[in-house]
View (cartoon, helix red, strand yellow):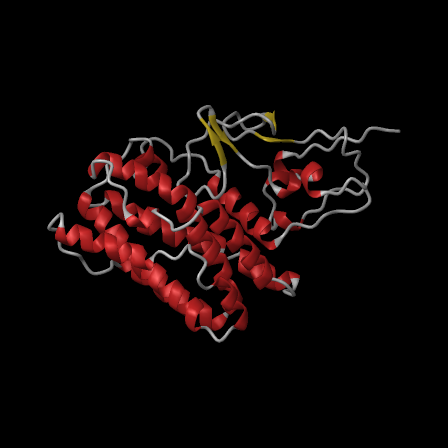
Amino acid sequence: MATYKTFVSQSQLFPTKTHLRKTPDRINCSSITCVFHDLSKPRHGFTKLSLPLNLKLSPFALESNSSSHGRTVNMPSTCRASSNTINNHNSEKPMTFVEELRSVAMKLHVKEPPKEGRNKKTMSQIMMGAETPSLDGYVKFLVDSKLVYDTLEKIVNDATCSSYAELRHTGLERSGALAKDLEWFREEMGLPIPSPTTYGISYAEYLKEISMKNPKAIPCHFYDIYFGQAVGGRILGKKVAEKILENKELEFYKYSGELSELLENARKKLNIVAEGWSREEKDQCLEQTEISFKYSEDIMKLITMF
């Protein structure tokens, strides 16, 4: 039998709507070799998927695999022949909606760091020690975060969209924890609690608006906000605590119950919400990922602004 090998070219790696690309029908999955462009090497370099990339860790890294040797980027949908197809080469196992959300998010995580000389602070710079967080900025970040969580939780709890019921009481909610943390800063640190900044207000208003215009866009923000906080957000919180809080762990980063179980339960609920959606409806939801990231990045940058 002939051996078929699929190579993913640079032009194929990040196409528009890569989650829709299908693996060619005729693939010998036992011998397939998948390669992708190594973002840490020159433009035309390629590397095998099994090798980790020595990229700086993104604070938004949802469910990424990491080790002391660097970050292993999970292969995008264009390279999923061995993991996303059933042994029978004539049939494919479709991605779940959460897998699609994750695939789109991961493509936004893997970005080249800002060029030297550019005045752009990133969360990876904070985490790696290139930027120093400030106490006032961190409190502003927590205030804006609470506004966003308050808004999202209210939308989910009060929405007339029946499927939103699946997203209630997941154990990932953060409003109550943030309220305790802000009270601690006020009482123990003697810091006044400021009003939300325009960054937090803008994201909250956007969530309210999109929930009315297109309710099916909300699950994307739900995924990006809650899963981002549970993984990358906790890493960021630990780094900030080491620098300015004498390693105190805030309630914002604590969860009641096993976090892995809470996340798995939330994945199942998100997949239930998307059951019966058309391809167009799923795509409209997935397109919210970049918007969610932009708002979240603006809020996170408050940590070093003051």
